[in-house]
Image (cartoon, rainbow, N blue to C red):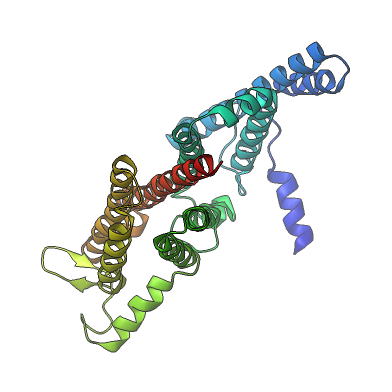
Length: 340
């Protein structure tokens, strides 16, 4: 089986569609590793340009093909969609090269930057990752294992233990770590409560604890009809887990907000409220649309409307957490500067 898979991968792996940039990249590596500062800078810049050009052109070709065009320079799709792996790898390498080139500037800028600017850079990086995951999901949304191998599952936004889910968990745990640091620096107990809530929500993203709670309520028969996937509320439907989680989220949110009233400054507190609003709009609002669409429309899960709803839902959840991370990071850096 492994031999057959290897043969299929070797057969289906496309040749690199940009023969011009391959020699350019190799020449750049030669310059990059040669002696002389001018050569190193020239090599790094050429390598970054070649890598970013390849990534952008490959991704453009994939989008064109997805819309029905057939560019001769890129055969797509392949059974394992190597173009997508290639694009992500190339753009990651390009980012690393650019970061290396500008490392001196970052070393000078970061210590002198205000907490607000540092938090903005952090949120921008997290948002860029979210856009990347969302784009990969959207491009691969209609593909199956037969046409694309394991990649559609890899970028699924609704499956546990996948890169988007791992990223969401990491965001929550980063928020929890930052809150714990604020607890250590300020001595305020409310930060410990916030950190614990973030750690739990991160574990919930990874393990879908809310689904277990919803299934328990469903099996109990206290709400809804036995065997029904959602609860009919008249004009809309809802899954079972929000019935359990929304009241708990309300209590936890009110306790946290009340505790942070005298801790965070008004702008940061307002931004945290906005973060919670954005998150709940995705987690609850678009979840209700999903439950309603699933109950009333055949094939909702595989339709463009269903995929778009899922993309907006997960994007709002992720961006809400990103805003919270920015608030907590800003407060941590502010406290550290004050302690010094």
